[in-house]
Length: 408
Length: 217
Image 1 (cartoon, rainbow over the protein chains, first blue to last red):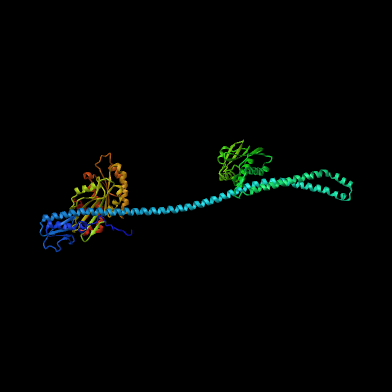
Image 2 (spheres, rainbow over the protein chains, first blue to last red; image 1 turned 180 degrees about the vertical axis):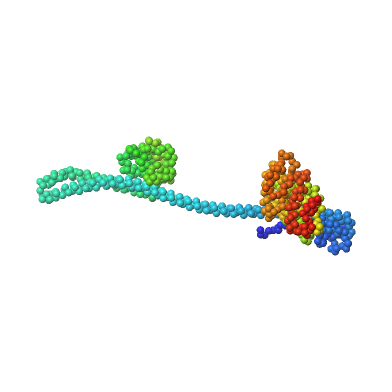
């Protein structure tokens, strides 16, 4: 230990006379000795004078001043008698005894205080060390947690991206079907139209020559009355088909802004109709899709995200129906809330699974046919809008999902 | 360790009575003061006590002159037994030439005895002494208490069978075994003293004479 103020000395060491009388007021002792003994000297065992006459006596009487077991010094006098001298020495012995007690207690005390202090310092150092260790550990932990959170977030982003891609894939399949159908009959109509056109070709020569009989013969031979009539209806149908494709493409644009996190004020019934349109082709012949839409207030939302939710619920509903069934989409506004209900008459969800359907990766479908994130993502989206999704289901009867959104 | 002072021709030894609180360490010293007929016998110095319990230490100085004219001075100390006074206990134990461990024979005190003994072992090491070579006597005190209350001698002997230290049964209150305890300790202390200070060759004191001189037998 550095800079120790008090250098401790062993409390149990051998004390000498000077040390033991060190604490006593020698100035007051001197006149007492003089009064008792006349001329005197107090000398240590080693012969050193502590009090009294400077020069040694020629032939003094001596009395040992004892402490513990041995003489620590002597009182000398020529005048005082033996008894007086012995009594005075005894008195000094008593002083020494008291002084020794004081010295020993004081020095033992210093020793223990110092020891306690050293022990405290050792403890303090140990505490500081362990504190530093914990600090380092906690810093490391924080770092690790941050790292882990980063990893989890990245994985989550990837999964959500995957889910989005999956739903876009489903959408694309629906859209392809929807477009394929009109394109198909437009093409067939056009090829029929080409045949009609080739029937009209032989009319060109007789018309130019003014040969009406020949014209009539060609007309009747080619049954051009019917061809003309059918040609018109072919074109009408084809135009309708082209309009349908245009509409689908327009709807598709609505979905293409899934990633565009821009808020818009919309009438959610439009989104319901859009989702129904997209799915309609996929469920044709399997399920009847019924829309029962009430008037809704326009709300500020992320329409692309809500489209994803509605599409998810519709596709789930369609998949729940095995043979034939009905899907009903209802909307209503009441009590400051918009409620959108998607009900199906499908297989229902077993009670045991009902609590788990919103858990990430929970799926009852075959591996690879779904990410298990559809409802998780849907719930997250709805919660981000300050709303919630409720579910009611009965096995064998059907399921109803209700999306509840606040009207701000 | 024993001090050899060539100038004042003095050998100073320190013996320490250690043990759990209220096992009779101070009583040992008081009885020794009464019983021993040592040539030089000082007064017992008792530092502060509180309800008869030692706070600092007690000290009994004993001594004799060797044929060579040297003074052999023994300082018998007691430590405070209470757990709280460990720093004091350690300071008193420093530089000890031998230790008497005063155990309490009462059954109820077994745990306290064990803890105090462990504390002794730890403190011996802390003050830089070697526990394996330190002269030590284990004294089981309070044999005067009713048999039902105390461990029997057989039980104690069995428990301490593996220990290398002499075992003494005592009743410090009535003075039994107190002198024997000291004798057993002195017998162990002597060889080291002789080795360092040539007690026999230079000072003409053999082991028997040493023990006899200290106890005044």
